[in-house]
Length: 548
Image (cartoon, rainbow, N blue to C red; front, side, top):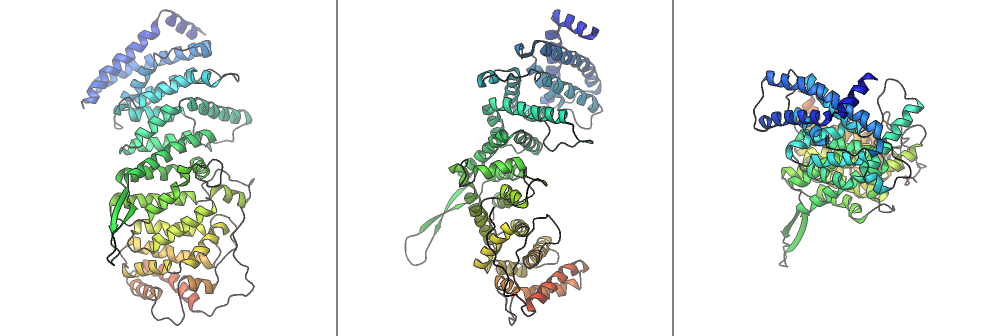
């Protein structure tokens, strides 16, 4: 009680502006040498830290008690720029510094002081206008404006936002939370979502500006902030997802390339438009690939891109076809190859049943699949594009290998297997062209070639056998021996087939490399199954599309 009384006397004596001015002068003294590239001596840092720590403790305690006493009537934001600047200056301290622990203490004091501004409760009757004028919302807006103030504030500002936001779910705790703690955690997330909604324009500016940066630490923090924002509520997930998708769609405007194609019969030369990814588009696709690995953003993306859904918008509905067009455009430019790798990663996240919000024993397998996978039109287009990409010998192994792994993922459930079987029956040469590619480029020293072959053999095995491990998704469909032969264009009497050449190559290579023996065993088992007489049952049930 006596400490609060002393703080009250200090505030009455107008000490808060004096304390703030001390921090401001210290920041100005440290900021200029840092910007000019000079490292202050240990004695100087020790002196400044010894001044900052007690001063920040008094500022935090004074503001916390002041805001708690006045509640929604408190409107003073004069301390915020100084607090932001202090955190930014301390972010410049090297990790190898002997004062790193003290620096973390000061940064924690800054965050705790900012958290004091989130104390006032919102009344249920408050309007949207009142919400936008609340102390909490004003602090958020000021912080977001500070982030885009100058390049040196980007990283520190994002770190402050990340520290202020609640941790993403599920929360990692040693003991289960009780009902009161759960209610408090949920209510805090709702409140953050409400206040951030009022700062949507500033939030959009931050994401659009910083997404173009090539600084890896900054990109890492930006992705983490996007994850935290989208995890607050369904509405914030839609807001963040719209921001990211808009950036990606805008980047597509930089990748249109027109080439001339001569028909060869004396007719007019035809212009064909292709999509070759630019470095900017590749960078944006990399951001999308990361955020889509988070269940909340994936769920929002599925909703926005759903053709038949009420929330689907035309510009988002066309996103998948554009991505698939880029995936199957042949180009040897490094940014384009990187963009294709990102697109395959996007497809993997979109088609991964385990990246979902609807999980657990309370939901059936069909419910989980229905909520976690694209609609049947997109599934068919995706499967078709993956097979086309794999079968094109001009594409890079860096994107072909994850394509095969994605098809392996489709064998986990009947929904994916149905689309896979339907397209394999139409594209009987896709796998054959890939095997020819592996055969002609085979090398026991090529990890890409061996990994692709190993994954392809695993994929072929899963087409005729049910998975023994992995997610329990109750797949019941398989290919018959005759159907597998048709998919591979195999005939027991054939003497010239890529599989025969690969088998011979593996036999010769396994004599020199023992590590290839397991790969050879898988090949031998596949060839044995193909050469054996067919034992297909006549009453095998037809593969029909599962109803979700």
